[in-house]
Image (cartoon, rainbow, N blue to C red; front, side, top):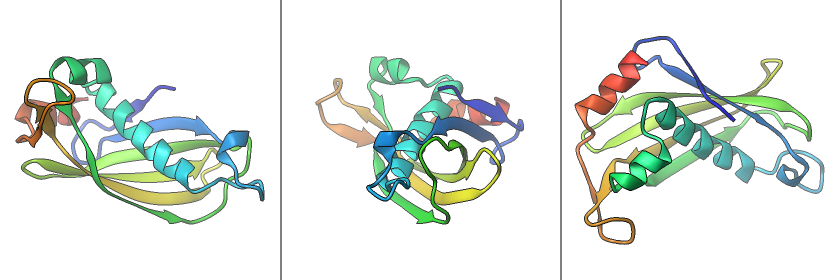
Length: 149
């Protein structure tokens, strides 16, 4: 699934990640199982960074990482199998080494399903994946990409 970025200025750049509730995303009652929202928010984050030029391949090649250090989600309305949804994501804060992404999940008809956020740290492996990971200052070039998308 792809990501569409709208609006050209940070912090109002919004990435839209399309998704659909599958059978395996549901609990025995036939409604979405809560971990699905966290999976979608993670996927939306990675898709947003890929759209800004930092896809997983580049991140691995440059030994970069953005580990999750905090996540939350408010469940507003249940989704059911077959529902087409979108995760609308935007960076609401760039700190020195961390950033916060807000996610709004809605059904295709606009019904708000969930609201969540992720706090991630920008980091670099000392000598590749598996080696020590250290927090790094978020490059101005990266911030500029989100302003210019």
